Length: 178
Image (cartoon, rainbow, N blue to C red; front, side, top):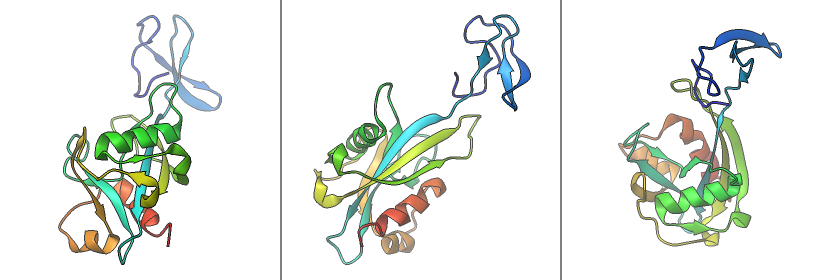
């Protein structure tokens, strides 16, 4: 299995050929006869919603690393081997914002696929949590240049840019606990 389209067999190193298998075009090694599965990369995110203000606000991070440097997103990232989606979501939240939440406090918000980028397909499981169930103050972490709560109205009035693929989840999370 590979996360980006393969040109060579990861088992023996020979060039791959395209074949039809299970009704889909797939890459196959003519030497070892293995089909090389091109699967999506699993990711997880969590939107922490603060309902204490007049309008609900969602904890977001400004990306400091590609893709989308300078764009705002919901905290999240790649799952690790052996890690449950909710565990990955809370780990990424803490790494990117310093905010901690118990995985048991998460509610499923959505599961989405992103348009492929350089052949990489991503499947993200999105969660939402109430700020009352979280601990810590937001600070920019490992791959973020800023971390803060935004209400949709505040964000719309700013000159900031939301990463388009994440904006829908931001707006859905903002109204989740109303």
